[in-house]
Length: 122
Image (tube, rainbow, N blue to C red):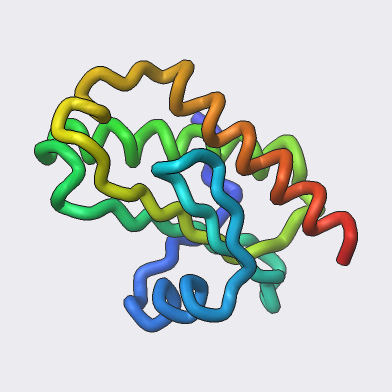
């Protein structure tokens, strides 16, 4: 098992700071990625998902997918040191229930491409 290449964001103030002051990328209409350059030597990552998004099983599935994609992304880009949060927006009642991993990967992939473009410019 590979160790995770990031630390988890645990404080509410860090989530709010990223949401208010970070640069924002929409991976899709339901996924917002907010980020800023990390001051530390390791990236920090968090997921914010509303209780309005399906039931606990659905929310946990989406969080698991998000962690897996983030781990792969940061392992592919080890020099990238950022703090970022993925915000999952509530949609129609069956939207996430019917979602498959490919749909999630496509949305997260769009966000990753934009994120790499913006971090390379800086």
